[in-house]
Image (cartoon, rainbow, N blue to C red; front, top):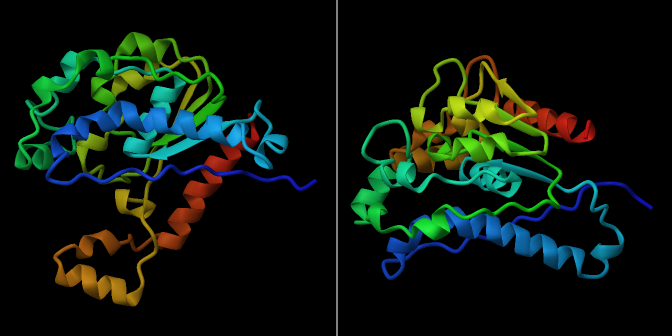
Length: 234
């Protein structure tokens, strides 16, 4: 029998004018979707015969990384999240939330502060997880599984909202990896020549920028190798 990975990537539902105020619900719906997807996969032929349930791992970028921390046992501190747009460098979505008149003070505290822990997930990798400054410190200290946190912002360390909070160090079995020549955009797809032109016309040319020391393909290999090495050692 062949050996490899079965990858589950739930499709997130977008927001329209009718449901934009429910955007914060992503914080508990995303990890819930992942758990539901895992349950479905484990219970569905032919996958259920091929899955080694002792080796289920999670990998997530940005808000996906936050979802992985949630599956590992991290919980939000509702008061900190509700104030996350009252100060800079905490919530990367503040401008969008304010533009769409999303009132964080009305977010459900029971839902926001609930546990989304899924003990079937045996280790996680979180790449620049969002909102780490709003996570409950005690819940981080209670995480039992190995956690690898990657900071790919590079030497210039742009976007303080994606800075890994100091409280993450409370996770007992946590390793932090930083990279020198990557940027947040290194996690995005490789840009085609046409894509570069289109993004430049839309004023988003920075999405295709790379450092002189490292191409996007090289950055992808670095990130993938770091993830697979961590998983292989579990």
